[in-house]
Image (cartoon, rainbow, N blue to C red; front, side, top):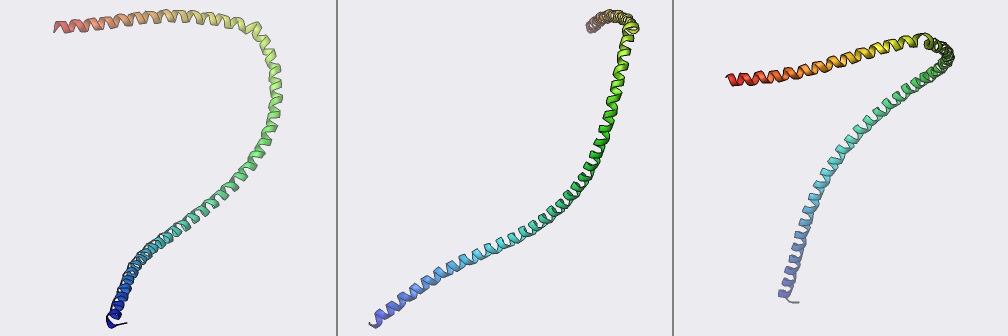
Length: 163
C-alpha cells in the first residue's frame, strides 16, 4: 500500500470516527435531555408521594372518625332496643285501654243517637240558614262593587272630558 492510499484510508477512517463522534454527541445530548426529563419526573413523583402520604393520613383520620361513629351508633342501637321493649310494653297497655274505650264508645253512640243528634240537626239547619243569608249578602256586595267600578270609570271619563 502506498503512502497516498494509506493517507486516504486514514482520512476516511478519521471522517468515519468524526461522524460517529458527532452521532454520539447528538445521542449524548438526547440522553442529557432525557435525564433532565427523568429528573423532573422524579421530582413530580416525589411530590405525588408526599401528596399520597398526606392523603393516607387524612384517610386514616377518617377511619378513626368512622370507628368512633360506629361505636357511638352501637351505643345508640342498644338504647333503641331497650326503648323498643318499653314501647312493646306500652303498646300492650294501650291495647287494653283501646278495648275499654271501645266499650265506652258503644255506650256514647247510643246516647248520641237519642239526645245529641236532634240538637245537631237544629244547629245544622241554623247554620244552613246563615250560609244562605251570607251568600245573598255576598252576591249583593259583588253587585255593589261592580256598580262602584262603573261609577269610578264614569267619573274618571267625565274628569278627562272636563279638562
